[in-house]
Image (cartoon, rainbow over all chains, first blue to last red; front, side):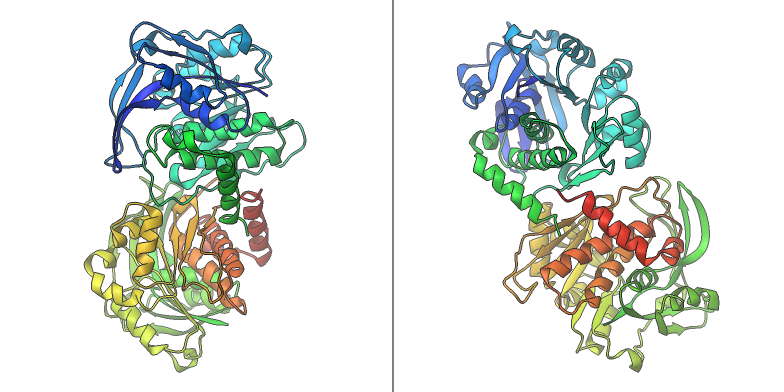
Length: 308
Length: 308
């Protein structure tokens, strides 16, 4: 089944302990779409400027990603400059040039309206709500957000949260949103705001899914589920790791006939696998050359390193 | 089979978000011994002062722990005062009164000399080496250390590391010891210093075992192994979590006829289980009232929340 993802398609200028790269293709929707493309059809809604060339579009279309919803606006694409030199686990933003993204007004092509799955990547919650309202018949809605929206646009964000089946955020965002230092209580507090299920990303330490009574139709377990990460000898560029996790996770979910607890757990593993590829090279380089057999191999590897 | 543990038996004065406690029984050897006592015979070598009363000794002896090696010295027992009010994941030391521990010279009772397993808890590496030298015939030696010894007594510590089958330390200690920010490369660097196997504790996020070609006799997998933690609604007091992990881990290992990769993985799970109990109440309160059926239950719980 098809996933519609709305979010940023951008250029990133990056500095990490492994080196520097100028203006590589990035953005949450890009990483998400590439990761999800290994599992299901993906359609992107976003906006780019005249610096978005055919070669950039080909990165997506060569993986079968539908780019009909990427609007071309006059000006330059969103450009983020960040550094991980001090700490690989935490990006230092050096510059955020919103450019054409500042006036982004998502437009959904009619060919996208039959998408069964919707992913609201990290953008203004007002826009997330608008997109969600235009897709009333989707089977499932998942989304992401960040500290900026939690802090300065909390009311708008709370409206989006009520619409979500699954929210994917990190530990710090759970603490900020819930005001609760304890992870389990924080998760319960966030699910009480709306999301039926919460996936919390712990960076290099993996992720945990928390379930509510609304997570599954059946009388399924409500125990959390924890997923490890691949031990990697070199993390080249962490940018897009969370979006790639979300893409692998949601892509697998969308590829399955029903979302059972078993499917959900496997989706968490596929998320972790796609995140592990994303960080092994700058930008989308590693995701571009990933093969399905590599994905299956890492899935088995993750099982081996975590199962008795 | 029997474990001999050498380390601190102490009193802790603690402040955490859950409250305060004055002079509760603590110390690395105490937490380790209690946790390990559920799996095998444990013998303690340590030193206490005249404030160590029969009621304190009974905490250990009531679990079958052999306290013949706990020396009584004139003066007061080691007393640590710490706070977790600012951050549950990191202890702030308010006072360290070594008292009788300052002149600790481990003496091994002859009745302990047939112990098959040795655990060198976090004490001066010079003393760790001396104890190890007095126990030449043990089947296995495991140990712990901390940032202080890594920084100020590195050469002494490096001598101990060469004697270890298993080293159990945390992420920050791996980075400090190896000078390597990457976890996998740091682990390889630490194992090159001596320990055949390295268990790295990630606090609330679980732990990872790294293996070398010397970890097992057989041609076993050398893939790392990752263990989750129990999601807990309240962490009352993290003191002794790492020692309790080590006790559960090593206690299970010592209870098995041979140390296979399968035994090692289960031992990691039992370590995580014992750590989860330790933090649920102040000092040793929760470990004291833990039952074997609770341990089995949490072991199954950990499997459920991490296995596909």
